[in-house]
Length: 130
Image (cartoon, rainbow, N blue to C red; front, side, top):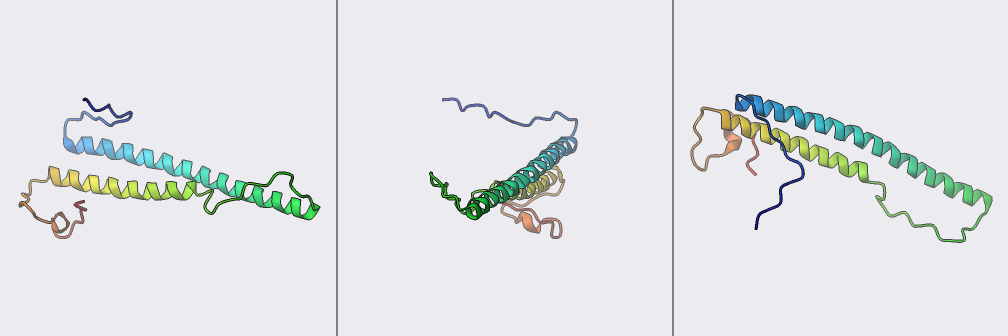
């Protein structure tokens, strides 16, 4: 059985691997910048929703109104989408740096011995091998 094609993928046909990796990194940076912009908007919306909820509660309390229907109880971190997006962006930045480091290793003329640590390659250049 054939695996389904992913909905999104990246392809760059450039004369050299260095130019291909540069095009990929440009795409990654652009995507992460857009994600940060979206996260800022979501964060602001979450803050407004929280303030609105608190304002409604204070109006109901000061007016002495009793709700006919119970208000949905706000669960902890109900508006935590921006925090989750921020964490995903941070993970993506680390992943992109690791990918770039691995591309540099692939382009390198330096020979790698089987089983060698990529973390110790080239005098301390840090590359995660996981």
